[in-house]
Length: 263
Image (cartoon, rainbow, N blue to C red; front, side, top):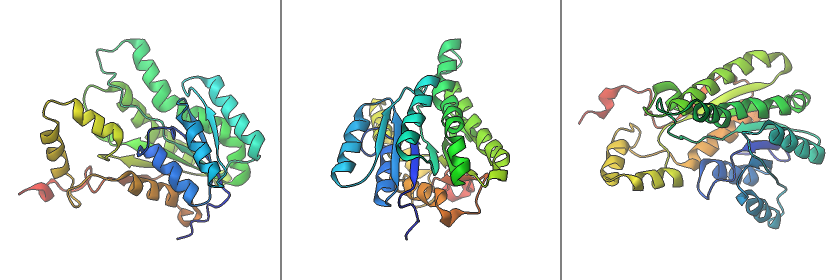
């Protein structure tokens, strides 16, 4: 399906993760659709990704950015808009489940909020004049943790709950400009980071099996490709009357009747 994203400038944060991460997968899908990805991320890996795309004749830009630094974000958006003169969509994808719990310090908690939520606000704030001009849209990547809690991760849970609040607030605030605002909620997705976490556990294989067993649809984890496909559809004009929505891509993990899991 042609999603009509060809030539659309899409600002995406957190897209310089390692190969197979959700952000990097979204980046590759954007490129395949002919969009122009504009990456903001602190990891220099972004330069490599952009070079790879440019070698294939695909236009892309990387701004190495500490998204906890307001000045860095402002400079990155200026660099992007100076180059392209427009922004058609924003995908806020930064997220680190950092384990900042109740035993953390004030500074650790605030730093978690800055990374996982405040950066979303700042990216949208600086992109907003261009989104108004293009009647573009915003997509925030959320997590089940913002709805269900997890334990031991107060900073991340508060941030992801806040991201959902911002999604609805922006949908209301920006409706007069024709700007849509939605969120994708992810539960159990098999990424390199998830694999690394499982390997830190003494009983990792057993833990993984117990999680997968609880995913109702096909008893398998969501793939980053499935998440990326939903993201691209949501920012496209194929989803032109969808705003203020929390779209859960999780095989029914969060919402479906627990009786589905009985043996």
